[in-house]
Image 1 (tube, rainbow, N blue to C red):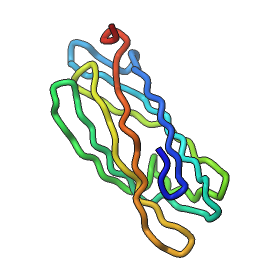
Image 2 (image 1 turned 45 degrees about the vertical axis):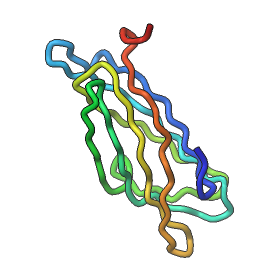
Image 3 (image 1 turned 90 degrees about the horizontal axis):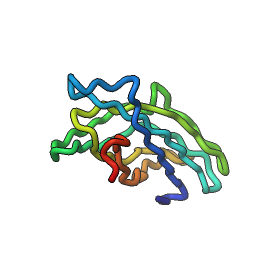
Image 4 (image 1 turned 45 degrees about the horizontal axis):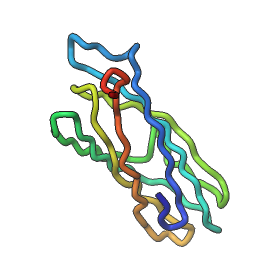
Length: 124
């Protein structure tokens, strides 16, 4: 997904060592790459996640920055981070947006593309 010269790539993975079937707690990691394809620096200020589990239950998460940081991404550079999402089901999905600021102080939103959270046992 590309908007405002920002491209977001995401790869998710089931994390069996953190998950617990008896407690219906399933952890997924996701690696995010935020690419600045523009000619100006941008700063990531906040995140908004829409999380949906396999039963259709929805949760919205808002917060400052990502993993405790508000990175500034130079033109032609990327910022990468890894985080986790616990679910009560073995599959679900996420999407959302980042609120960012350009060098002139203008705020804009960059969409985070929809991606699946699926444990290998649930893939046919």
